[in-house]
Length: 156
Image 1 (tube, helix red, strand yellow):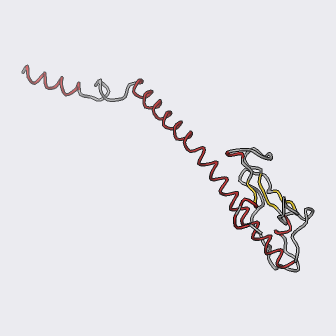
Image 2 (tube, helix red, strand yellow):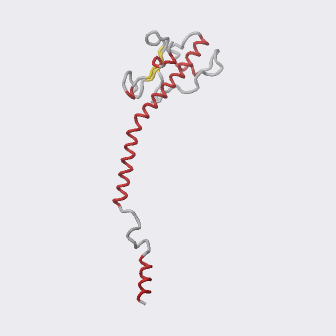
Image 3 (cartoon, one colour):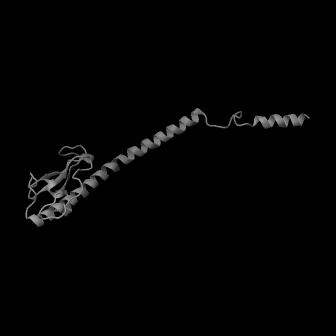
């Protein structure tokens, strides 16, 4: 009989709410949260330069597209758009084009409009550029200006 009482007591003691090893301690949970936070911080620090480079590459691609549209405009009209017309003329239908040359917005990856000068700097007939991340002339790294005369496809 003694053994039967022991078995009954033992079977009731294994209930999950009464056992000591059924969950994680507060220290263990905090340690995991700290490790997750450190990993997220490392990823953010390492990804930021890649994001800046991605935006610069997107601006270069946009400028190449704008340059192609400007060249098409020149072939049809015989001159490049004036500063007063700006790049917006490429988004409009006219007697030379049934459809606009550009359907995409003329906003750089940092949310500012692309700049256009006609004539361009030096011996260039025009220039298209973005001021980069800082939105100001000049700069280095992510703040570097992206210009059409930097692009090999746009050499005249």
